[in-house]
Image (cartoon, rainbow, N blue to C red; front, side, top):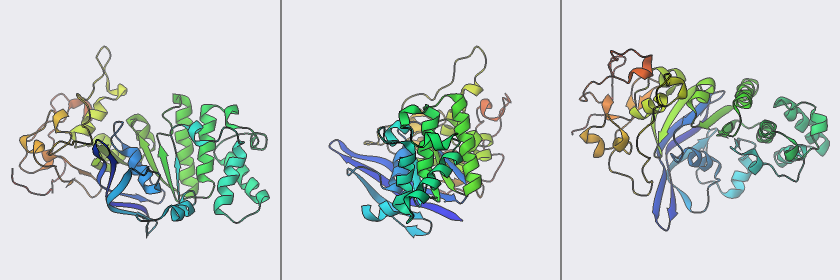
Length: 354
């Protein structure tokens, strides 16, 4: 069942310096019970895309084109009043820093109750009982005692659990988790990931997991979308992205994982910096950082080439006329002889002249 569909979505910020094209022609779907990870460097548009669904963008931002369809309803032009009715009840979001989400002066239990009472016509006693259930659901022990504690009494991991309890209090169908594990240490991070998986299984909720950490994504995601300069440049199942990725940017991200480094060698990195979103270059925005770039990359933006029914990538290397190259050996297990870029699936991309 399709819970979320972004159809050719573009979002821009209008500033004194010019138009910032933060999200460009994004097409995505999210199904019930699915965890879709959005991955990319800081500033690539992950958070803006997520906030655009909940209409949490500043006044300087505008949806230029496209549609946002949530649970079969087109909410693209919903007013703020209409959005207040579906935030929390249909779509929720957990942010990176729980202390900016939680009110430091109000007990955590009452904050959960507030979310419940906003969207449900029930008594305060019923709302409190529901809030205690949510505290138990997210793994906060001794919920009765901790119900009346302010956020500063909790550790970072427990605060994030509290923020998650608020987000889930009214049984939303879609949860956006925006870098919700980034500020946590590795042990607590693993517990939050396990908790999200458990909640997905219990509630059947669809989760959009926004992150720049591919190691974490490998543990949690069913599908992965790679984002660069406001565009989705590759999307597929987690297995396809981690074991058969086709875009040079995805190669770079995987090669930069610390787990890929060999003892005594420097960590790999992607050279250069992402482009300015005000003055985007002609053609492929990644071309200037792409060691495999061809002349066409500097002139024409590549379309999404279909590799399998679930896997697509926007790179001219998938065009039938492109030269065959070898993937970096680090991507597929270190076979030094390399593997032909296009020897595992048929390319069915759009033909262009160049």
